[in-house]
Length: 267
Image (cartoon, rainbow, N blue to C red; front, side, top):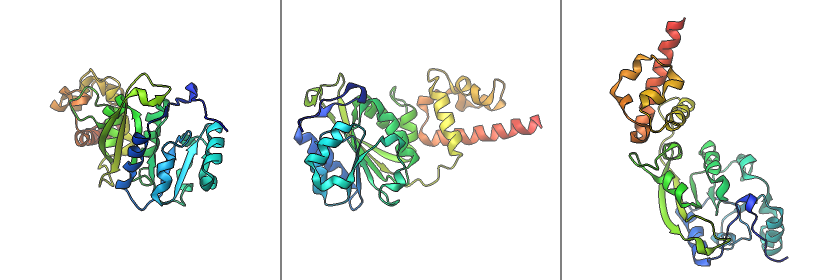
């Protein structure tokens, strides 16, 4: 079959530059000896370099046309070409519950959702690499005090070391996206326990960043209510983008303690 036409509704932008494709594929080398899962292979521009890595490789593609193209052009991968939606997959079933590297030229319209899925499966995914919008890559890699530092930055950096590797210009894609792209690598850090209630941590991060211009004293009200004495602490004079991951963990513990006290008073 002939070339697959990129589909706008799937957020497809096919990479044309083979040197860049090789460079992206090589980002998995920092996590050797474990299988690779490629998300959104399209016509296999990365796949052709990943198959050379001499380790188990599976690719998952939601576009039936791309799947047909891959099956025709990569017969050696036949049983490892999965037609499915990555966001709905049970990842434990992929390599018999073994860890794997996640990589891809990710569909730009779901890149954030892919990384939330990675976080849900962090014990399975010690390393994640690939290409996304430059703006999203900058957000993930940003540190406290930056205007781009936000929910994704904190939630990912709590569990992964983030490296912004290189920028990719628009003209190497078909069709060219309206934004620049970037290649990143995220490698699991040594954290096994956050040291706080994980569910509450996510809630605190999301709630405070949803009103990022306000001080914590105001943005935490949906969780603690209006008159919580905890908010008198000087920490609450800060805005969320000023807090490091460790400070968010500390804040979560303060919030949990305050919630317990409020519940005890109510009883």
